Length: 159
Image: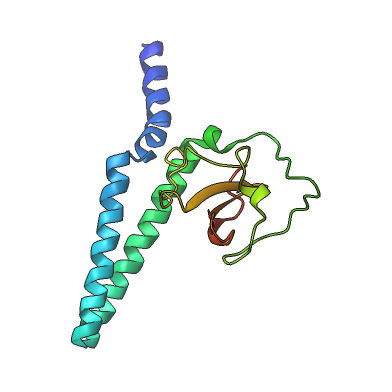
């Protein structure tokens, strides 16, 4: 009886963690839903009905919030994936927070800083041949390799 109670207690504690992790298919469905909401918003803006525009904006806002919460749940459930070793930048490296539009030197998006397994981290797929996810300190930046400009950035991405 004691083993049964301990097993039930352990299962009740571990189940919320297992349920919070989202499958790849669920992530794709959420992304599809966001695209549909954006399309609905554009359509409502074209028609000019204020009530429809307001409703479409609300739905889009709610779906974005849900996607962020799902990603945070995934990150909490898979915290070991987001723990990386120490970062050593190129010669003369000095970390400064970056934003979209920041320009990197080519040495910053070399092989040792590149993140090729972006799906593991639930990052968007970069455009083939033109963009690359790069680790910069504990941040992750999507860099346009032709110009060196940052297209997207996630600050404090790694622990």
